[in-house]
View 1 (cartoon, rainbow over the protein chains, first blue to last red):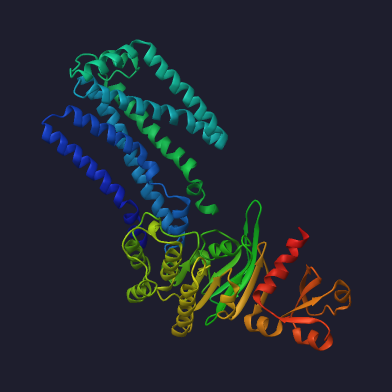
View 2 (cartoon, each protein chain N blue to C red):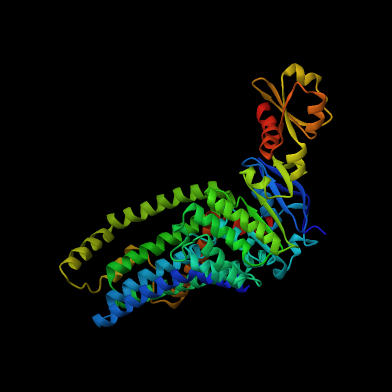
Length: 240
Length: 286
């Protein structure tokens, strides 16, 4: 066990250090500017992307699984590793879900910077679409399902972007970019974007809880799909 | 009691089936030879349950999947294709081994690192092929293991480094009389001067098991034409393959053929010849 924990520490310490360093930089940036809008937006974007990626990052590659199996702890190492990965994946999902909620609240309250919020919304929406479509397909059809899911995701993603650009969202985006480049803050526009991007009604607590729940489901699902895609051995511990 | 006993240890893949029986006795260095893809690495992985095998595999007299962590730490193992991530620093290997192996011998590890001139700064991925091979070897040899398993330990090494590895293996056996080493190598000359016992594996099955001295002393390669081969006594023939002049015949009693067929050329036996004839025979059929 001690051997595995040392292995795990060596495996993740650089990622943890990098993660911490980046957050520290963002915080210093926030303090030095004495404002929270832009840095908080950047921090939310950064953390949400990394949190959603954490399940993938914490996976063991097939080679690492073999290495874990050959260390004295053998399969115990792998089981411990699975538990730890699951905890990290869960943390990632919870953080992501919390951020979605935070994002939605910030959106409504107009406290965060709009262009950043749009990017975050897009990232999270695409992530949810991917998991919602690809997970069941891959579960049922395996690799073929992944391909079908990928094609469907691309189609829906493309439709979403086109819809956004063709409807009022395109005009709003253009206005934001235009105002942003000349240095103006835009007020009261979030509601328009919210309508166009079909985000939930954040003033309603039920809707907030639903959003958080959806996010948790989406990211736990993404964890499962990531394991399917990147390391089939993780699912075959007893068959190796 | 054999330190390692495999009886019909079997692993099934789509295009390859392993079915191996072998024993590794204490105080002995046992070699496993075979062509690329013959099943050597799979055998080694099956021994320590990296790949789960059917049949029987016992280490220290106990089913390999029931070994305790302490018993497993008595096994030193180095694979060609499994090692710590290239992103790890070389210095991390020492920390992990120290934490993982109860008997980790830090002084021995440091001595070997110094002897083989392994840079301890920087990442594993920056090591050369030779340095990485040596580091894998050191990792397996630095915790006073009772059973050492080395998959191609001399692969990718220059002749000086190879000699150093072979020296260390001999020295290890002198200092650990109850230990045993099982190793594979494509460089069969290394095994001839080192091993006590040799197994040959081909297409997942053991096709030859002999004492190494028996192979070098008693085995021979009889070179003959097709007509001479027809008349040859086949009692000690272990295999044959086509040659430009007729047949190369591997025999287990070369003196018998030297005395009874003085007209035939008989070469001394080597592991290479065994491999070429026994594995090459199937190659000819293909």
